[in-house]
Image (tube, rainbow, N blue to C red):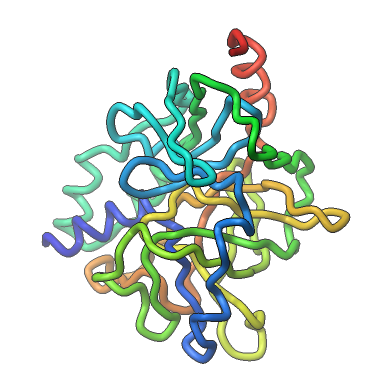
Length: 270
């Protein structure tokens, strides 16, 4: 029962790890220096956000589990002025967790997650001048696009799944995938294997929630999504995160452009 409870928490609080990789590709091919994407912010302890304006970080709302006094960006600690969580975000009800524990069926928990608005903004005390903000991808034509995902969380491979002992703050990795669903506030991709898999196919794992999902437009990577959760199907007690054929869901930022712009424009600038 404890295993199922932890898995449900993972389903709501993961999607990116230091990336779960192909079993037949050496890990060194996935590792990259931090300079590959300096707009990546580290939330306290684990999880990520992305700099989208000099004073603003966007992240998945569930990464905020308590007061956030500072984040780290480009190796520098930055003090936080305030947090703004989307009013449509709600933590997964304990009753659904209990129900899944009793029945082994996580479908209602998944339905609850699918209806959530898992996004938040972090306002910094001082504008960032040493890192260029990521550009938000605002079009709703993400379906079928190649995406790059990045993170420093747990890793593993598609055969064995995510390593349960892997640290949730480690080396930066990046992998690639293709958007297979673009419905409402979510972008989904599947961890493929075999001939359909990309050369550096990968999936997010535990600890990289809020990490970037990037699309390449005119030789520039733009921010289309944020790592959020994995879809749990079948017997939840037997679910192993990070194995092939699983679907990862990411916050679809094109659905939140108006909200993001409204919040930022309503706040006084530093």
